[in-house]
Structures are given as structure tokens and as C-alpha cells.
Image (cartoon, rainbow, N blue to C red; front, side, top):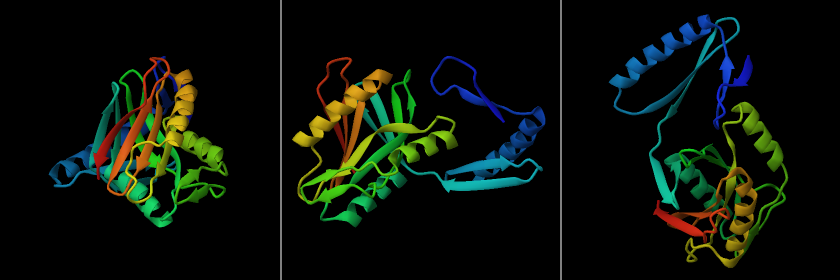
Length: 222
């Protein structure tokens, strides 16, 4: 199938598909909506129609979403991602760990939805007092994620953990990194974004060079 941009807005890449496939998929969606309306729990379901007419269905539980409002932007992430970040932090204790964040960006609406947090690359260095993220496989992960989602999922920032009893406020090193991120993302009119995972809470740290703002943090108890 061929992709093309149908407007000049962000996330405006779509597919050109035959009307017959639209009708088939619409019927599947209509039937699925009827079932979902009768269910007590929320669900995410995706249907895929093969070239020979075969249908595949994928279902995922709908997770509770938490939203952070920081400096005019809204950052959201679901309970599943929060749990995965917590698990990655716990696996590496007493050392710190971290990686890149992937998400969906809507610049006009000033919203960023965090969809995934990658594990630390193999060449990363973690200790009880610091973390240096490596680069092994990072660009390949970003490229693959963008290709599989037609550019919807992109690199949006960094995450790392703090050891027990330290809290989630950014350190001097963290402030240096968020300043660098703000410089990089300012070219796309986006803020620099960092997520810090502590023992009992998460913090989303923002910084924008275009408006000469200081780093701002929004904390949330898990």
C-alpha cells in the first residue's frame, strides 16, 4: 500500500487502500464495537486484513492513563508503561539504569503520549551513583519503530532511574542533560523531556529553549 500526506499537519501520513477493504474492515470494527459496548472492561483491538482476505485480530487490555501537565504541555503514559519502567529499575538495583523514550507527538495540541521506554543499551554504564546511556542499537530501534508505525512513533526523550532514598528531583547531571535535550528538540519546536523513576514515584522534567524556561518537573506517585 502506498502512503502519502493528506494535509500539512503533523502525523498526516495515511494509506491509500481499496474501498472493498475499507468496507470489510469497517464491518469488523462495527461488530467489535458492539461487543466492546457490552463488556465491563475496556479493550484495544486491531484487525489486519491480508492480501488473500484472511483476517487477524490482536487484543490488548486498556490501561489506566496518567497525565502530567507541565509548562503548557500534557504528557501521558499508561499503567503498563509505568509498571515496565518500575520493573526495569528494580532489575538493575542497586545500580541506576535508563534508556530512550518513544512516543506520539501532537505539536498543535501540545501533547506527548509516551508509548514505550527502551531498556538500557548493552554498552551502557550503570552504578549506584550514576548512569551513562550507551548507543548500541538505539538508532536501529528508532528507525524500526518509525518504519512500523509510518512515522507516528518517534524518539521523544530519555528516562533513567534513581537509587533508593534519593527521590526523583533532577540532579546537576540531569539538568545538564535536559538542557542538551531542549537544544536538540527545539529544532522541532518540542520541549526537552526526561522521565526519572524513583522508589515510589515518577517525575517528568521539561525544558524549552525557545521560551527561555527553566527546567520544570511534575511528579506523580505510582
